[in-house]
View 1 (tube, rainbow, N blue to C red):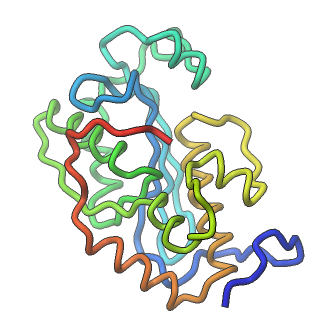
View 2: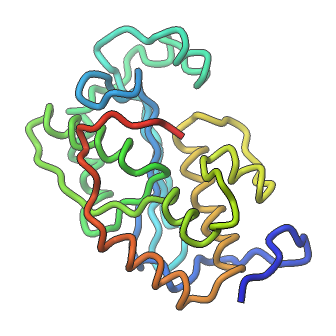
Length: 213
């Protein structure tokens, strides 16, 4: 039974529902643009989740080896000087792969992030394939009464506190807090059925240009 998500009396649990995959990586990327085959990653943020609990947080700037468009600087607050001396993607690829292997990849609009990961790993000579869990589709499935499911709408809907929107680790944190809220509103069985259904669907072509949420 769904509760009133606007009710401040509804407690937020300490752990995610057991209906979620036991091992997950909640990930967000900031990039130089929206085309995975052309644009590059400039920041990675992730949370490692095991048995409903955050066991590690990791963030890194990435040298994109290209200029940083002014509109991306304005959107993210990331300046070129912040990328000076940052590692190339290839230099952190094995470390990142260590976080991802054996865990379900979760991202908001997963097609976007998964497409960039595949292309960046490919440039580094690594084949990366996963069946990501998209938190946009998760939201659409469990909250069909709402028309929009972008991260801004979810943050507003659940009154989630965030300091730096459009920064990778902060946005990844929002997925975790959204999942915590959902854990209070839906049963383990409802969440498990939703995740199972979404993970059965094949990932959309990663080379397809997609809208960023």
